[in-house]
Image 1 (cartoon, rainbow, N blue to C red):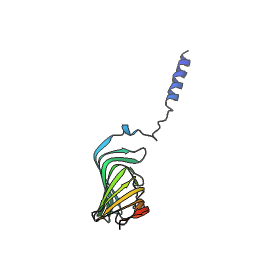
Image 2: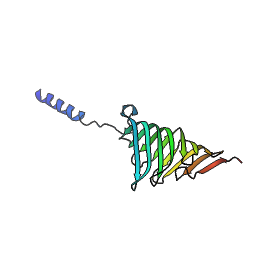
Image 3: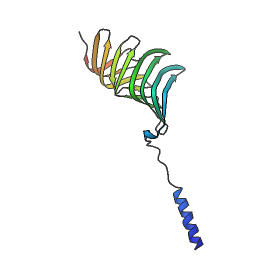
Image 4: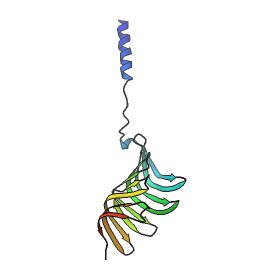
Length: 167
């Protein structure tokens, strides 16, 4: 009878040690928050962008940083060229691509104001783009359209469709 108990306990120990923990989906509520978060992206020793946010969560399992209530400043050869305010963004830590959710308000060194929605940043192409509505307040005119892309931090903007330029 002692041998039966031994094998039962041995079997229970072996089967209980074989369970795997699934880390592919992590609940954001369980990731610690960082207050007053800053992150800079450098390429060949030059600053590309700087994110400053009121809070962030680093999700190591999904290679993401989730940032809230922040500003991203874009640079070209270390020179500041524009910035964009956002409510929520997700930074891919492997590619440095960023998805900005909701309304985003950009300002340029030329004092232009640009309102976009659900904007994306592609790090490898240094391109900012969206397929949603865009409103550009430039000097004394307002330009609207749907979908845009820029590769120089809002200095030159290519609007894809429904362009309305006042006369």
